[in-house]
Length: 277
Image (cartoon, rainbow, N blue to C red; front, side, top):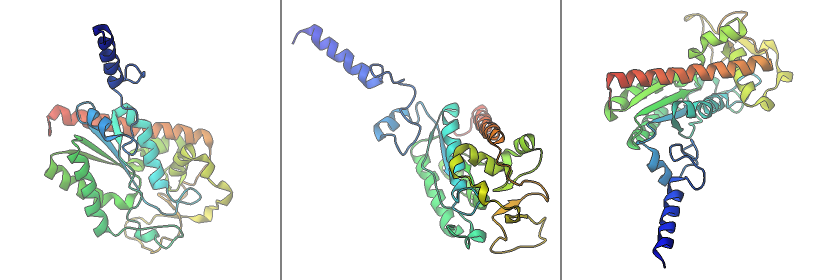
């Protein structure tokens, strides 16, 4: 074989390897989802080019007239929307959580806290072992919060990895007031709107009745198991679902911007302090 032909073959091989010949940007992965990426491509990006991973976590429980899997679908959609902005990969969603007070409702599944805590710790350790520097937990379910905070503290100190836990509905409280001019609730205006932007075909206003809602008690006024309703309002007279498409689209955009901005800010602060570099 002539030298010129050998040279051409070598050049073409290099182009194929770095993605230039196929049009793929060698600095951007073919997919952001760890479920779909190959181990070879993963190793070529983490940690040299990508240091951050998004971990969506949630639960299966009643949500008024929106999907039982809302607490999973919301952070999962959020992850897909913001991953390119924060230059992150997306870990597979943890679809089950701690929802004991709602376990009586059809379709609900609750994991014991003493099972959930070590399981989430092992997931975090696995992500750290894969050399991610920043682990961002996008939590969709309030019942997981205490276990997630403890797991984040334990694994961060043990593995020298930086972990951020985000409860998106609390973080986006200002956006709830900005869009709806009132507070929200579990399966209320805010959560219903976000899901309406994600899976509009699975929102069922025809099944809605305001009697499906109850106001969360202030302090320790009362406690009921199972919870008395599948829509839990934060304040009396506020937070009922609107099912308004324009509000849903605006809220979806605002929430995603809010979460992405927080992630970028916290990582910037970590970097400035030189933590675990």
